[in-house]
Image (tube, rainbow, N blue to C red; front, side, top):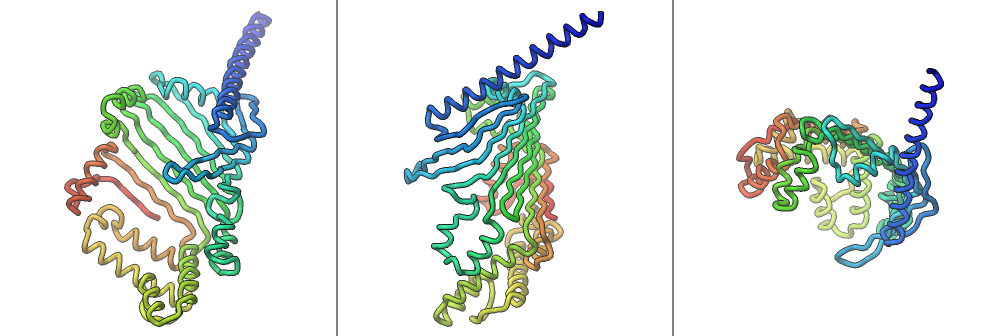
Length: 350
């Protein structure tokens, strides 16, 4: 009896490993086909192990549709976890059985555009700002390190709908940008595909964004310091009283002299506060949606004062309005400058 169970267990594992091996081979074939088609410029290695796959030294050539200008994006390593789920999701165009679950994740390391960090092009910024400028040195200090990214998608089919939870993080230098979201595809991907064939705009009515969460982690007072350095460089280059007055006006300041960092921050906070209060008077929807209980004003003030090292934004959609509903509401707002109907979303900024 024990031998029979052991044999059945061995057969199960062999079958499972063979199926896993088939998915790994399919991923490698898919990548090689993309290289032949020219969608991938080059790779140094593609390999899989224990259900996970990776591509080393992945290079993509992108062509701007308008200018025809080419640019190169390189990724030191592209890692895909749970390749079986990824391949099946792709082949079945997202179709899931009732109660079925799927999850896969991707990690990208050292992403560069034309040989430079995603957010810091040394050559371009050195040319525009000058390598000795304070602004260039500031950007170099905080941004001149590799950019990395991670993304995870989790799908479940419930009562005919596909519920998707995904999360992603992009980090570069001293900064990290994170996003979590939960959304529902009404009727699943089958319904979405069917509608797309007859009325693409109607697809918006079948997509519900249930919640979104953003987190931005950055050095304390980064916005304040960056604004000040930019302001200081502009005012140093001004040759006349009129030019200085114009620069101060652009930064919501008064006078034509170069303000110290503390003066600049205090004046900018005061000017921004006045601007926001004027905006709230002109457009009540600003307070209803974004600045409820002064949350936007408080956060901006804290960032400008250097008292906040991160920004958390959370949006909830308790009535489960679709993207089509939001499109209708905000199109009406754009034309009438007022909300004909409240979207009833909950937005918090901390």
